[in-house]
Amino acid sequence: MFDFLYAMGTPGGAQADANPIFSILPFALVIVVFYFFLIRPQAKKQKEQTEMLKTLKKDDEVINNGGLHGKIVSVADDTCTVKFGNNQPIVVTKSSLTKVNVGDEAK
Image 1: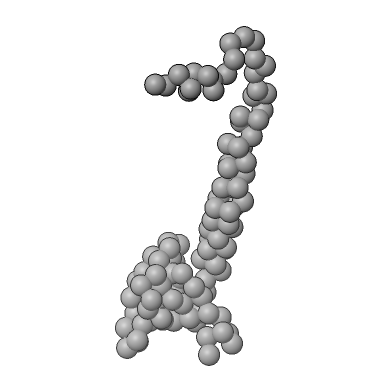
Image 2 (image 1 turned 60 degrees about the vertical axis):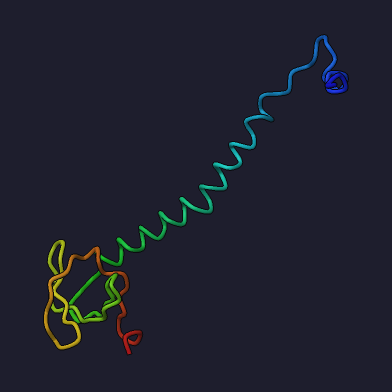
């Protein structure tokens, strides 16, 4: 019943092996694609976020990761005091701030 499958198989005898580079090449290509489309842009975004957090100063208008807009009152090492909505100062961690609007951008 399955004799035709055996007939279609590889002939018995010495067969040249495929070059191992051609079997590794697709995996290397996938790694390169992941690097350029996923890892590198994420690292660039993280670097920009770190730089933004280092340059925070008083009177900058910020948006936190919850979407609240406020104005920085004071900056400490790992935290800042931000006035939200009703001018109530709230201490937040710097890492929760996602965007800074400086000068003309804030208006």
